[in-house]
Image (cartoon, rainbow over all chains, first blue to last red; front, side, top):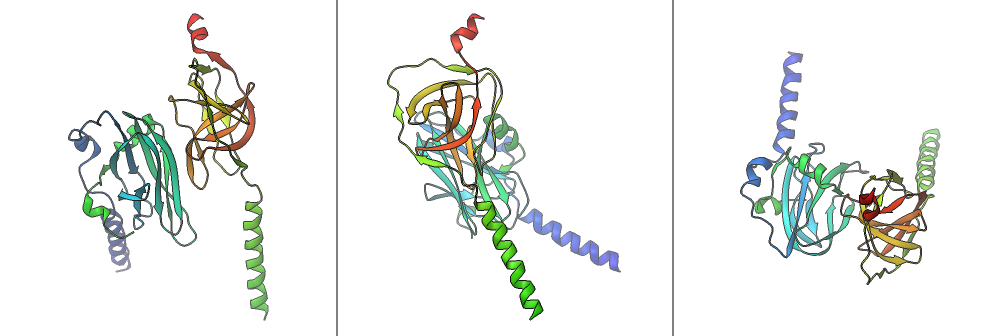
Length: 152
Length: 135
């Protein structure tokens, strides 16, 4: 009887965790459908590998414009003209990443989950392209516009 | 009464611990970049180097990476690379260049904020790319 209860609790927790993760096509599948970046733009890939703190999925902003959501095991990308940008997420505190983008350049931003006082923080961190390309393989597309409009 | 006293004591200890953590402040100086107009040749870093600013994670600069002088600030010459990511990773994260005075890296230059961040000085070896090719 007790074992049954533990099993039910385990299943509920597992379902809760899975439901918070990205469910789109894998990066490998989706990358074949992506347009090449135009000559005067650069591309920023933003992804979250960790499933930790799955309930915390803040919006991701670039220069205050909402561009996506920090979905666990999910990725999306944004094409922007060459320039300087600040990528930010907000939970109980705002975390920022400032970076430059050149035309034709690709940048990779990993969203890391950090401990907070009352809620976890999601911190954008710029990573090397080799590391970013490798980690993207573990993610699924999470760039749906509907997902962007969800709650913080 | 005793319980209330213990609670206050606990709060005081936590507050003190938090204040202690804040004592080692990162030294940041707003300083505009004097961009270089003349074309410069890339320099190559000879050995791996670890650069560390207060309250930030260390950055490993890899041997063999090519660095281009993009200008200067009061603290030294500013070098940028496209061969690896250079960031100051503290509460927020900033893409950065490095600042070299003579043959010592003295800190980071935050590209967007135009701010110098002091780091523990590290002596480095840089060679002109063309000299390496000759060897």
